[in-house]
Amino acid sequence: MRHLMSPLDFSVEELDALLDLANDIEKHPEKYAHACAGKKLATCFYEPSTRTRLSFEAAMLNLGGSVLGFSSADSSSAAKGESVSDTIRVISCYADICAMRHPKEGAPLVASQKSTIPVINAGDGGHQHPTQTLTDLLTIRSLKGELGNITIGLCGDLKFGRTVHSLIHALIRYPNVRFVLISPEELRVPSYIREDVLEANHISYTEVERLEDAMPELDILYMTRVQKERFFNEEEYIRLKDFYVLTKSKMELAKKDMLVLHPLPRVNEISVEVDDDPRAAYFRQAQYGVYVRMALILTLLGITVE
Ligand code: NCD
Image (cartoon, rainbow, N blue to C red; front, side, top):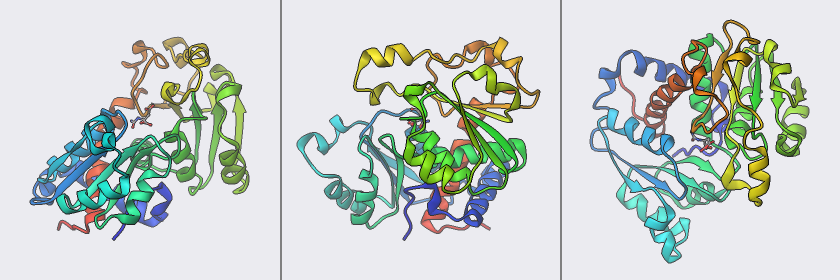
């Protein structure tokens, strides 16, 4: 039985197969409409979410399966003091696969060790968010044609943003990927990623503070929200929250075929006037998130469709 805790749980070849499957689902959704008939997905969300939870649910429903779960710690037995280990043992009796989001780093991993069904990490604190990374990889590969040979700017809260951490881990496995890390000093990528991931693997990266300076060289701009819920100090959040705002005039500095991605939810970091720019790909990205989660559910359940 397999779980998904980190994007590195799949080899590059396995990831290629998963993304191929997602593209096939996109082209021929009807082929997969009953693939999970009789199967149940549990969504155990101890932290708020719209996209991730609903896209998992949509994915399972598109496959003909059904869904059950909870969407906040308050509405689950966690409020009574139950541990994730006990909760997952019980959920294992009710469902065939579980997607879990938790504010504590490592909680889905603890759950997976006690689980008798596949567990998917749907975001653990500021640590990892592997299914967002699968979504990002599918979006980049589908719209750019390949995952290598890109200069990607990661902009915003690179300290607490788990989507950024997971994406860096995943992208260093492809050839000729350059990172431009765009953040204020206070929200730089943690040193355990800069040193142990980028430097240890001799990956080319630069760190800049001004988005305008980075813009002209980027093939992809990955914008992120300042992660309010991970700040200890509200004043600090208020000071940093509008540090970056992507506007139409900044888009004029970019390549004609640059893509703008964002895991969403957006707060102020992308002005709504950018939404009509053909390079704005964040809503298409949300659609890819459903296809890739369908592919993931099929893969972890070991279901093949001819
Ligand atoms: C991201 C997350 O939860 O980390 N959202 C998502 O899953 N699409 C990004 C965020 O909340 O900023």
